[in-house]
Amino acid sequence: MQVVEFGVPTGASNTTKIVLCSSKLYALRYLIERFGVIDWQIVIQSYPDSTVYIEMQIGEDILEGLSKRN
Image 1: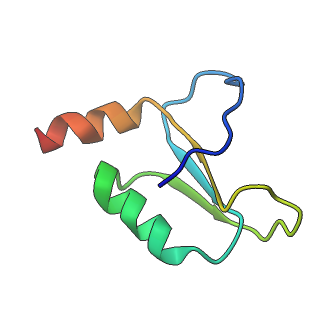
Image 2 (image 1 turned 60 degrees about the vertical axis):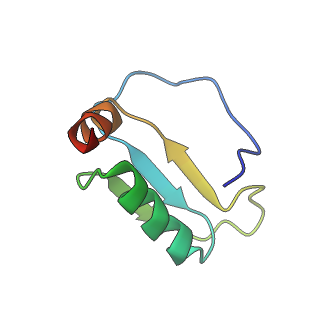
């Protein structure tokens, strides 16, 4: 995967959120399997003018998911 943009955090969150801006369902599946976090908020919404396919807002739960894998 390639990171093409990043932004300033808007605040702390406990839950990771993924916004699927296009029909990249296999990429979504890859992220879920790779990071091992089940309690994510997943938003599927078409943004025709979006410059990215997937937006990922990382929460503190991602650290818990990664620590369980090791």
